[in-house]
Structures are given as C-alpha cells and as structure tokens.
Image 1 (cartoon, one colour):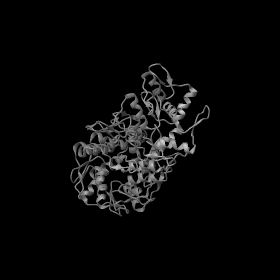
Image 2: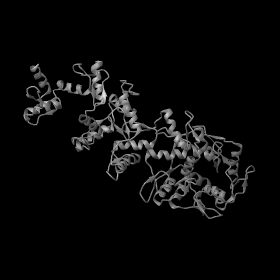
Image 3: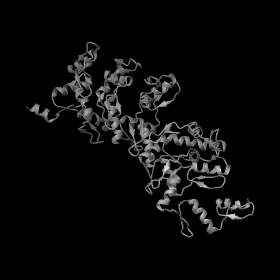
Image 4: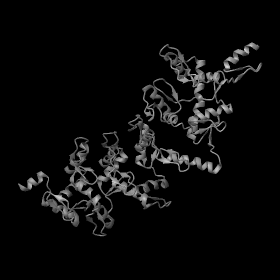
Length: 577
C-alpha cells in the first residue's frame, strides 16, 4: 500500500545519482540507469537497434510494422505508444502545470521541466564514452554516438534526400512537402507542422522572451536563437560556403545560401509553379493566392502576410523610428528605408546633385525608383485600377484605396497626440504635426518660401516655371495639380458630387462645400487682426487687408488706375471699351 500511495500523491523518492531525476518505483530507476551506462540488452531483429527496456523495443518495432494503435480523438493523429498520445493531447488543452522557477517558462510534464532546468544550470549528465562530450538529453547522446559508430540515419526524405536520425523527425519534415499543418494557433489561425513550432509562435502573441542576451539585453523565444544571436557580438561565423567563402552563424542559413550556387528551389507553389529556396518563403507566397493576411493591426485593422511586416507597420502608430541617418539625423521605421536614404547622400557626394534618375516623360518629375515612376504615370494616363466598392472611385495605388475607404467607415486610426485630431493616413498625421511644431522643412529654391511637405513645394514651384502638366481634354486648360484638373472636369460633365445637407446645393469639390456650409453656420474662421472683421475664406481676408495697407496690386494698362481686386479691374476696363 505504501508503494501505491507514493504513486498516487506524485512523490518520486527514487533518485538517479547521476542526473538527480526522480522515479516512483525502483524498476523505473533501474531502467533509467542504463541511459548512463549505455547498456542496451534488448535488440531489434529488423535493424539491430538496441534498447534499455523491452517495452521500448516493442514500441520501436512499430516503426517497421507502421502500426500506430493510439489515436487522438481531436485531430485524428496516431501514435506508437500511449505515452506519446497523452503528451500530444496536451497540445489541444495547452495545459502546462510545471513552471521553471528561473525564467517562469511552463511545461506539460515534470520530465520536460527537469530537462529544461539544465539550460540554466548548464548541467550535461550524459557523457559520450568515446570523446567525453556532455549532453543534456540521452537522445542527443544517442544521435552524437553515430558520429563515432558511423551509423547512418535510417530515415530519408524521398523528395530531397535529406536524412534524419529519427523516424518522427522525418514524419514532421514530410509535412513541409505535403503542406499538412495540424497545429493551429487559437489567436491568429496560423498553422504549423509540429507542436513545438506552435509553442514558439504563441510567444509572439504573449510577448514572452525568456532567454536574454547578457551583452545587449535582447530577449529570445528559444535558447538556440540566443546562442545564434551571441555570435553577432563574438563575430563567430562557423559555417562557411565552400563556393564563395561566405560565413554564416547557422548551418541552415548556409544550406539555404548554397542553393544560390546550385539554383535549387525545392519548394514549389502548386498554384503558379514558382519555386523557392525556403519553405517559409513558399508559405508566405501562398498568401498571395489565398489573400490571407493573418497578422492584423489592433489599431487600424490593416492585415499583413508576415508578422515582421506588422511589427514595422505598428511603428507608424507609435511614431518609433529606430533607424537614424548618421549624416542628417533623419529617422526611419525600417533598415531598408535607411539604406535607401543613404544613397541620396552618396549620390550628392559623388555627383554634387540630388537628381532623381527615373524621369516622367510627360511632366519631367523625377523619382528615385522605377516603381514610384510607374505609380506616378497613372496620373497622366488616367489609369486607376483600384476601385472603391462603395462609391466606385478609382485609385492609382491599393494603399490610397485603403485610406479612402476610411472616409466611408469613418475610421481615423492616426491621432495627433497634441490636439487629438484624427486622420485616415499616417502621412496626413505627419504633415499635420508640423502645424504644432511649425516645421517647414521643404524650401523653394526660387523664392525661399518653405512648405510642410515636398508635394506642396512641387506644386508651388510650378508657379515660377509656369508649368501646368495636367491638361483638360475638353478645353485645353492646364493645371498644376491632377486634383484641380479632376475638379475642373466636373464643369464640363456637370457633376456636383458634394451636396449641402442644409439646402441641397451641389459643388464640384469638398473645399467649396466646406466654404458654403459656413453661410449656414455663420462661422467666419479668418479674422482681421486690425479691425476684427471675420471672413469665410482666407482669400477674402487677404483682399480685405488691402483696405488697411492701402495696397492695390491690380493696375489698368489704359489709365493707370489701381484696384484691390482683379474683378474690380475687369469691371473698370469696360469704361475704356
């Protein structure tokens, strides 16, 4: 009865003198000791593999017979032993009752916790009898000993010929080729080929990074990532390409790199046939066909195909720009944007000019990249392939359509921290914030006038050059901006899409509607500093101020009489006719 009570209360009083692992009964301890002595009295008649216990041999023989009698009721996966089934079922419940006192990481079984604690203590109780190398797990020792015995892996992938030391590892690997992903994240729906990958992924959602670098404090989801990261500080690159001599911190990176030389792309998309060097790249690519965007921004609802893209996007909301230019101090959200910006300084240094190499043949505007020019060309061709499903308005870029749709939904996810005003796009917020800071970083080279955005400066410079690149096909009138042309074309079409809710009067542009609504509200936001008189629009205030200054900029060419407004001059000129 005493032995039974020990089992029921979970006490493990029989301790291994080599590794301190506890057992409920002496026979379990005796079987465990064989892992340290390497005594394996039970041999498989098929392959000669040896085992410490007859029960392990029985389970192993199912590798040859392919028998998997223990089936999971949740996902249908089958297992060779009941113990493996019980361990697997914890994937579905996600119960982890055993917690590490050092890093607070939780585990499904006490054995997993004991093995994990060796990461903190650096204990390696399993020693190779040939070379003395220590290992934290007996399974790692078994794999290592094959280096000395020359034993080849029994399991080989039929697709790419890769060998595995265990049949279970081969089974997991084959899911890369079949696309089977049995383990699903309950937070984002992302699927994985094995439970350990799911566990690591879940730490992205809860923010857990239990393994910390002592040099820089950066946290990692798993110990192997920390080990690889530390090579950044040490400069160690132990894996070298025999073709070009390039070094890598990880063997997997070397393997992927070597495919550049061989041209091998073993992962092929079943939809379009495109090949990839990595399975992860294939997984990301397939979302192009499925339109799946599993990583959603909680602030604005925008979806992304990769978690890294979401992380970069979130900096738009937080304002974080961790990559700074050492030359001018400008900050960027990504390293690639900083590197691209560096080329501006290099070009200025090499040529003495900031000329943009990609020129529009219609208006002469320059761009740094061909993709920017391609988007710009649509302003001249009128091509707008991205259509709003609500109002059928077309856009040259999908990002502009996304911003526009927020007009219909009312969403303004980008909020000014100073005044609380909301905006549909991050660029609009950035320009608005310059009102508070009074920053006008873009200067006109002709007159010195400064602007809050480069686009405002570009439009302004056309007043100096007389350039009007946007021409009406009906009457030939030219405009400095494409938006002005669009508004003007409504004169010919008669379209007035912006209606006053008070009187029903229609207008060609939203600014005209806004000015008109002030007639109903009585609002006069532009006030004269001299006499306090209010005006509906800034141009009216500008004209009024000439009463106080005496300025009369419009002169009659016939008699020299001067006027405060061009309309008054036109009326006067009729006297001479």
